[in-house]
Length: 381
Image (cartoon, helix red, strand yellow):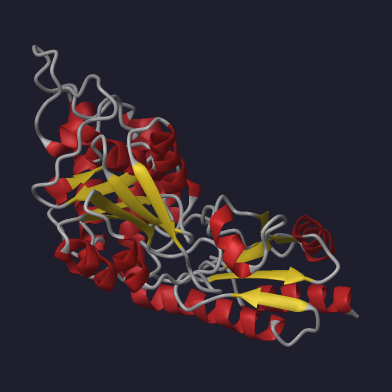
């Protein structure tokens, strides 16, 4: 895959593009040929849609380090998956620890519950690139602490958290860890059993290279969130109570079969290329970009080894202005602002306007790096 000459897409942390041809073909086949709901009927296309759902579930389990696919639910997106986990696991009076490097997909549900008087929340700080000291989580622990919620990789700097150490802090004290893997799953190889976390959520449309419409929610055996959403599941229809099985409780309603087909195809595509090699190539471009930008006067760079993300600011320019100039001058498409993660900017020194973010996918190359550097260099000249 390669970006078109007139369009240099560098917003892969928002959603990867271009999608692999195999992914587009799988989506199109499910949408135009199968056209049936999964888990609801016995005619041929409905059975085929069931198989699509199962392939997607098994594929997601492989990516998560070989977890039991029967513990992998596939709701409509990562934000819903995180809400299902958070709302489903907290109890009145609980204390929850989150981090300043987290995304609003977790911080807003926690704030909602806190504002409603259901829970108390402590947000521990991060350093100047978004890393969290597990010791800060231990220091914030209270007798009522039940959950630690953390982003595996920062969507602003790419910094990876030490999940194993964070999980050790929580598990030693009888707590649980919910991991937002939106910026890691698919670009960073995952350790076995969710990397130490108890619950992991991720979207299909980011580094997995799938499409919007489906997310991933895994919970280890014994963790059974109360269902946030109730409705039809295609099973136990004679009862007005939600089924007991984890998957059925987390997947009410109609699944997006084309998106599920795309997810299975995307995982196969990633595995065929080699997830580790693909991630390393993307991180190499991000590292090259960060190093070159750091040599320019008046440019501050915020990047860490992890997800292939580079944030930066240019002295004398608002980040939104920089993004417009990049597109107009070289067709470079980036994100700017607070990036749905305002708390981390308090620690980066970029509160208010935020940063410019470039995120590198398999469709990018060295010419894209050169285009960014050339434009920023001309702005500083």
